[in-house]
Image (cartoon, helix red, strand yellow):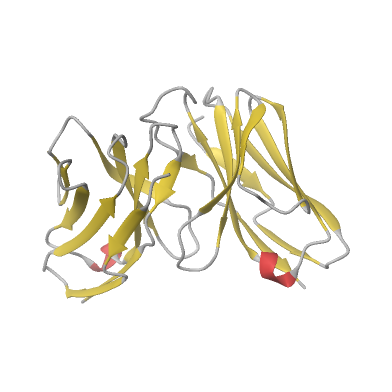
Length: 111
Length: 115
């Protein structure tokens, strides 16, 4: 099966700085990589995703990059704001259509 | 309707109680999922229903019993739970179980406490 690793487990940044969260995966057949944001006590919500035929995708302050050869993908948040504080989970969807979540990154943006 | 709903929001139960969690979606999704989530940990997959049939059961204890009465509803029946089963139980759905690139839509979860 797939194995997804996520780093760092905690991240603190000053407001306005950038934040980067990295994930690696093991199954080269995985072809869909979503990122979920989960605020305290709330449901995970999809913030951005990338498919294996694309190397980079951007949506305003959020971007995701994918390196299929190295089997890693990263979330980039620029101009961070306090409301970006949350736990972020990466995931990889394997050929058998199962979600494999990373271990999560707790991001704190310090005002 | 573009949401997954779950009831109840919170549930406190004793170890001898029987209770059920409910999940509903009206997006026409044909895959539905139950996850268990402990604080600051990723969701752990428990069950997957594909076209109303149980397709994946991730070695979950029998005190958790899923049921999919129709394509819009998913239940999780609870019996003789242990305190370590206290967690957030999340339901999710996705459009087509056969598609490899499927966004999962999560419900708000049921916060379960077992005393």
